Length: 215
Image (cartoon, rainbow, N blue to C red; front, side, top):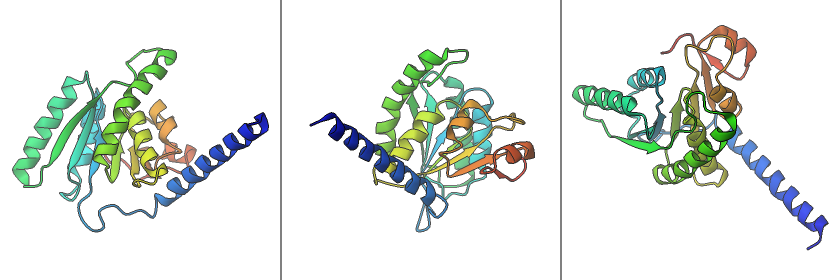
């Protein structure tokens, strides 16, 4: 095959990918998971205040959002304890408490260099892909930890391959007042619903949704 033929083939593949990505992202607003039953949800938890905030969000969800698959970094013991305590209290108030805790390698450690974080994110992606293909959730709920990126990328891939449309719902941390977090900047164009908790961010990022403080 000539170089021209190879170039045309690559161009066709790239255009097909871009078109498919556009279709998947456009379909998000019309997609209504759980219209005929329960909603399987992947909840990405992170160290620090991320887990506390995400559990407040989960607490507001009805029993329809089940099973809940929590994804945490493999070195994050504190989040695991918080999740177990939360789900134990939830089980006392209702019978529908189906959940799992899944671990993947941490995408990026605090103060880790950008060059090395690429390799660690790719490693996390290797674990996220089989996890998401196995779980096949209706929705991914996340709020900022770096672990969100490979998980959301894997969820997006399910839609690109025509396996299942996975809604990506991102809630920016209450701590972000003027600018988005790095994770937020990455997922802003890819999320189906992107919530901010300060009006100043809504002004800067028109696609975002502002409902006031929600966590």
